[in-house]
Image (cartoon, rainbow, N blue to C red; front, side):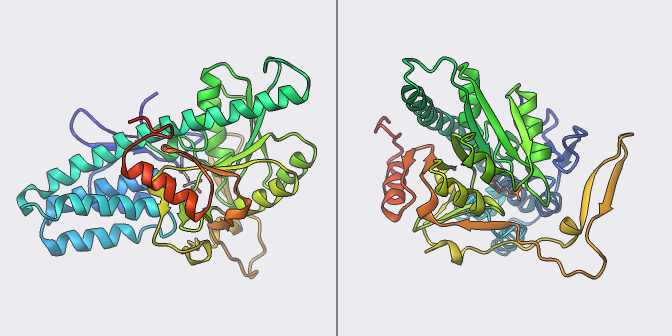
Length: 373
Ligand code: MRU
């Protein structure tokens, strides 16, 4: 399968319009910094790593028009403001700015474009590694379950995982974060089934996660956001695995609203709760979760449901009475104490200040989890 963001033969940056999925596969071009900013704001592109990559290309496109120091500053500020919670956007913009700032303005646009390409390549490699680390962890879980059942191998064991929102390949350049281990296990022939939270209000689970799991042939079941607690209580969830938009220095994590409630239910039922993310999602400057800015989105996302009628035509229907007040925080914070472990490209670590320091040290030395270069 191709990447989520790609360059056409004519040099145009293209991606998928995620607001049209799962009903229509609509590609569109990102030709200007305005195109990139709009796509991020309207969530035609979404998911922390993908908005970072689109932001980095937006910076390069802006520098084609104005590569002065002031132009660089303006473009960085504007793109960074498009969505506030996922730190990957600012991280990618900072990476682009640091690459070009010392250079002659005449060279800046091309340098930024090349750096955006490297951000994409790095994302693919990171997520492949997250897939490997996570698959190892989940295989061990299947082995423990088999041993408890008095079995010698894991034959006949299906791992039941629960995920929230979409942290799959279309939230990244490829592989995904939370779904990378799922794809890896599925490719290896390990039976895996995913409970997919619908993820109100925008339904990224029902629309996007179900779509991409289906495209890969991974068995899955879409559930309402409120069903996960019961399934965990009934012993029908082996582990919860989610992505993440920002990890604070103390190990608290911000992810799609509703994640916290799943973590509470997992904790209460002794179900492991894993957060998969690249180290670029760790914000060492953010002391704790409550300090993370939470995006508040339009009331219409709550008051209306978007979908298709049976004849395939798009429809938007109101479900809230006119005049009722509406709040729409798009993310929440899961305290570190509820996170069993973080799965990063540099290894699995505890969600704590010391766990994060260890994994960031590995990243700085560019070594893998086993110390392998
Ligand atoms: O509002 P969204 O759809 O951009 O939110 C996405 C999430 O919350 C994901 O879990 C997160 O960005 C990780 S994506 C690999």
